Length: 539
Image 1 (cartoon, rainbow, N blue to C red):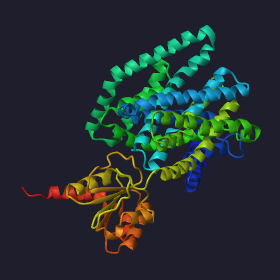
Image 2: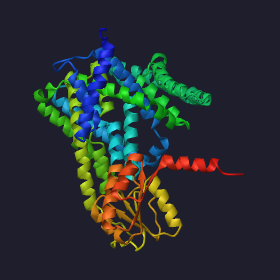
Image 3: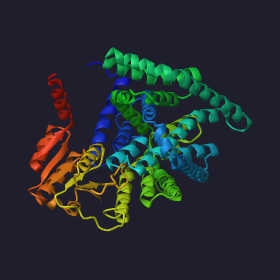
Image 4: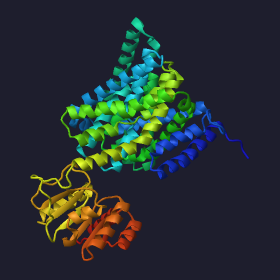
């Protein structure tokens, strides 16, 4: 039997344990990221059993950072940021300042340096992109006004952290006093030169290369080209301009995001990005010393309080100060009540540069794990408060909504539901829409449209829509489990109603039929049918 090399052993152990712990976390309704971190703890030097090669894990983690930052750049939207800039930019900067101040205060109590407190506070100030986006997507509020504010806020935080990653080596090298100014000036000069090069040369060269590869018709070459651009620009930025891999990868993604091929590039590289991102989180877990929980319980409690209470309270007050609703303020506060990948990168770099002690890094890692565990609970509390604050059916005069007889009930107003509603209203139909969130973009203002805010899985929402008097139910949400429950309850409430549901595959079609649906529609099947009809047209 051949001897396993340290590289193979590290990758295999990391990915296998990440899968096992990630699956367990998912089963417990926790973010899989928690499982990946715990997998790293399991193969780290502070726990018994197999210990992975730390140096190799760090190099693999560097690839993970490059691909993570490339993904952040791909999803960076100047347009989305500009739409919420009046609150996202000042809000994020003030919230970062508050978190940094609290971090410096705790660091002073623990006897750390001012620079150490600054890095510690920065690490506590920035929320996890992965956790925040998944939380918003799971609760179907990513496309709402508050979802856009949260994402814009996060973009500003990410940009601030990218700048911090560039300046940290300069701060460590300069030490302090008069020597610091020239070092920072030189570093900023290199960054400006790199940014100028990317905007002048990269902006033309990268899209041109991708378009040339697309015309070759080879999907394999396109995927390889995207990876070569991400890794090549990151490496070139570090070697030629002396800036971090992270900044180079971010700009590569940002330049590519302006291309029409950006979505395809994101899809093609997603599996590899996910795999190396997992190894990044595993390597971070390997650095965590679980003894800090027992040895520094008060410092850990204070760290978690800064993350979950301090900066979230600051965000809540800032959003209210900009005259947004209490529900929006609570959603932003809950979204930011955790830390993640940038925090790990900052803490690891700060420790390597001898700006923070090992205990600070351990507190950041422990605070991240605990805050990510608490985040779903905070969102549940926000949802309950929001339901109490909002009326069940918003109307101009706040009178209860009464759905018309012989009407159509439409569940969900997303990409599919909004189109269905528009065509039904255009045809003169009376439509009652059941939507979970009141601030979803584009809700109709039409005399034949009635809107109910709530979860259609709850029987009282279907009762309020007067389903027993409706002639048709359209279930347009993409979540198969919830859609099946709605179909089942609707068939029980009105045996005569016609039910049409949106399905993702043949298994869901069969499931909805058992629940009582008359028709289930798969998008791919309708595309194929339309293409066949067009192909068989005569003349």
